[in-house]
Image (cartoon, rainbow, N blue to C red; front, side, top):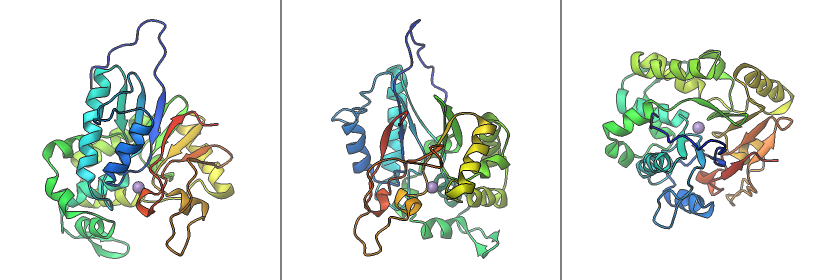
Length: 280
Ligand SMILES: [Mn+2]
């Protein structure tokens, strides 16, 4: 995003840093969580001054109002920039899926699992027809330009807990440029391949997971990976089978403290997590 950010006064440090996990169309829960943290006022407007806020991606699908969530984040991005802070967002795999459904619809794509289409995959993954009907060109251009990765105060921000980012470049700028070029210039097979890669998960679990986190941090910088995508109850295995809501006390620090998971599983009656970094 390219807003003319007001420069801080000399000697003035940056505002506090917040990250927000997967929203998946749960607009009311998002408004409540942002208000509870003091980031928005009762009318839903930015009230966080020079705070720095990052959404970790996956705005739509499964929940009731994906376009409402995108509209809110776009509004907060403009309001935050005017207040001297910022509100930014990463591209999640559901952004690739939603954009693919809008662009390619039922067009067949070659998949290892047989013939597929973006529209069918989107519907299978919680796509909401009313979101597609309300998707406007300005949403598409905003979504298409979201970065895949960012580095803030030593935190490497990613949507997915995968090392697939390494296949797109050796620097954060290279990865983001590669994803944007792919969305702008490449065809359905390359889009599908990217969607599949960024849908992988659980790369930072177990002993190999610590090494995977170290590999990403060594390549892109930072001391901790912060990601969404994999609901914490699935990561921890503490997911009740009887349909009762999972217990999600907060962000999940793991991989020898090299990783923080931020998807509190709002789609499975968990929580929509907002956290101020750093976490101890
Ligand atoms: Mn995801």
